[in-house]
Image 1 (cartoon, one colour):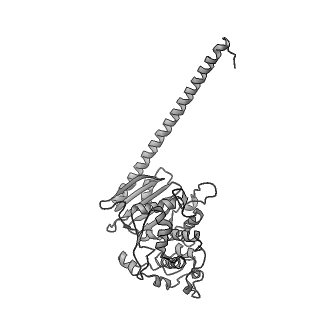
Image 2 (spheres, helix red, strand yellow; image 1 turned 180 degrees about the vertical axis):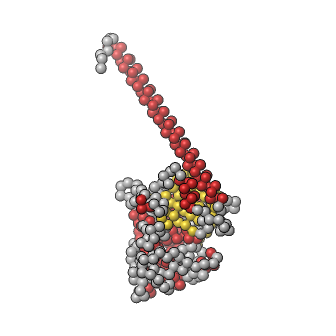
Image 3 (cartoon, helix red, strand yellow; image 1 turned 60 degrees about the vertical axis):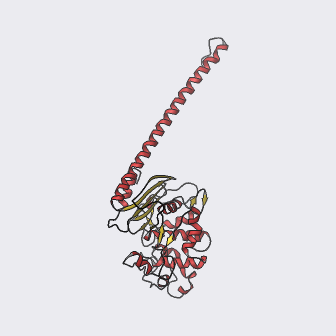
Amino acid sequence: MPRCSVPSGDCAPVSTAILLAMLFFLACVSGLARAVDLEAERAERAERAERAARAARYAFAHGAVAFIVLRGDATVLERYADGVGPDKLQMLFSGSKAFSCVIAAAAVDDGLLDWDAPVEQYIAEWRGRGRSGITIRNLLSLDSGLDPARGGGRDSEMIAGQSIAAALEARVAAPPGRRFGYGPYPFLVFSEAVRRVTGMEAADYLARRVLEPIAARASWLPTADGHPHLADGALMTPGDWLAFGKLVRDGGRWQGGALLREATLSECFKPSRANSRYGVGWWLDSRTAACHAGRGGESPARPCMVSALGRHSNALHVLPAADLVVLVLGSVRGRQEIDQERLLRLLLAGNGG
């Protein structure tokens, strides 16, 4: 660096002026970068809002009564049809099935169940009846081989006509792991196993262990023999179902604490041996195997999307990698069905989905 050619007492003001000019320049550059970042963030938020609005228009044109998009802790969009609101109970139909895996995960964490233990370990009357290979996982993956009893007729009549007693006596139609059979009986058998190991109804265990800590509630239609119908009978408000989805999205964590171990919860998202699109009580995105996204450290891999799906276009889509929960509720009186894949394409277009 050239030496100062003026008396030494005048060098300091020159150096200070240069330093101040440099600092001013850096501050301007930094401020400009922040402004650019803020503008990009505003543009991204606007684009997300427009995609959500586009998806909502499609959903409501096809019979939706509620549509909510949650990113992180922020609601991107929340919309209801007349007469429906965040606190009005809605029937979830087969969307109820996803609760069973969370019940199982809690019971595994509590040392009460084992995913791969034979069901006859918990239900003694199954012993010696050719059911020894059926596990808890088989029941909830719908590849137990039991006759699933799909049923028919009006929703409420179908639910009221099914019983745990009949489910326990269901015939074995295939060896475990060989055939995917969608229906309520495996979930009703599971609910009885939970009742026996916890000493309470599976729905009550779910409430105490999972729902109450997240300030959520569920009501249940009963089976013919008076037990909560775990496969199809849940009624929940949109706000509470959304909170449940957030818990699952966040790997079992809620407000800084862990209600469920993420490693245990991740078992819900392992594909059935008989159907790669179905996990343990949850439907899986067809791309799940190719797009796991971890959170770093020792956290288990997390799927791109898992969904709880029910009749009348009811859906809870959980996208951990995108930090999203998407809730859709359809009208029980509507004749149109919402194409969930199209809905998600509208919502996620330009967002890697």
